[in-house]
Image (cartoon, rainbow, N blue to C red; front, side, top):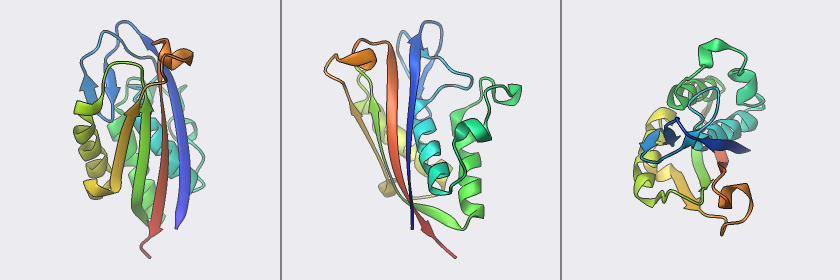
Length: 158
C-alpha cells in the first residue's frame, strides 16, 4: 500500500468558469490557473503522484508548457491514472475536501465522485468528496479563492 496527500489553492476571478471535480458549476467567478484550475482534481493528482513518489503536477504538467494551457483537469487526471496503472497500483480510496465559502457544492458532489471514479478506473464507492466553508475566515472565507486537500491510498495489484 502507498499513501499520498495533495493540496491545491487557486484565486477566484471574473471571466472564468468554475470547474470542480470536472463539473462546471454555475457561479459568477471561476478559478485562475494555467489549466482549468480545478483545485479538487489537482489535489487528488498531487496525492496520487506523491504516493507514487513522482513529484507533483507541476513536474508532470508544467505551467510554462503551452500544451497544458486551458487543459481539462479531467484529461490530466486520466494521464496520472496511467502513471498509477503502469506503476502496478490502483485506487484503494480517495478522501478529498473542497474549502469554499460559496457557492454551495453539496448538489454537485455525486457528479464529482462519478467523474473521478471513471477517470481513475475505480468504483464510485472508493471516492469521497466533502465540501466545507471556513466560517468566513481567511482568503477562502473572504471569497478570494478555493482550496482543496486529498488523501489517497493506492493498492498494488502486482
